[in-house]
Length: 291
Image 1: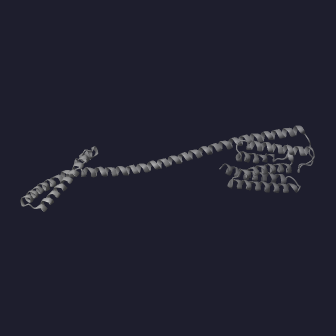
Image 2: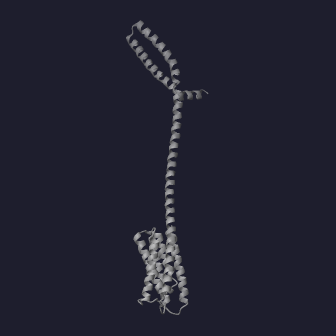
Image 3: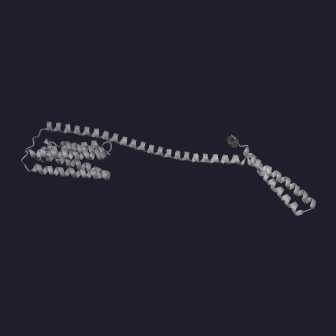
């Protein structure tokens, strides 16, 4: 987001630079200012496109090349537009702010010092006659003015570097904090979802548990319902066994014994059901069902 906003500002600077260049061109009758304007406009447009590519494909090497090219281009623009008399010395700020955003901590300050060194090199080359400002007819050497010029712009560049670096670091910290908060919120949302799922499962288990308790309460009363028929069956088996002994019918005696054994097994089962009756939950459920 930070790079995206700065990219828009860079294109805005291109428009401002072009507008100022047109005003300068209209004030002169010579042809070379037009050529300089076109070169400047094309150059800064290319650098802005390179910056757009850096946003799409972040890379430290591309970022460093971007800043170096910005400083070199700014130096060329200053030379072509009058040297120390140029109205475009502020163009160094593009490289300085870009470095502050791209390189943490000292990136902007280093870029500011490099820009100041480039202007110093221009002054030295002008003073020794190795180079002459393109738009200037003559170059007057004035060390005090040059010193004030360099110091003032160095202070401006350094101040902008510190300000933009501070803002950049604050934005990075804010972005990191927001990212951490987003991760925590996402983690909490997952925990809430897990709790909700566990709650749903618990509700289902409670519902099933209640059904089991109700069923257990119903089963616990089966001993009473079964005991009465078993008593009648037991009496009948005794009569059968007695008659079998009187008639000495071994088969009938054996069948009567088997039925008695089966009844004893059923009684054992009913005794175990008595344990179910003693459970507090079953007692409470039976009370509820009985009103």
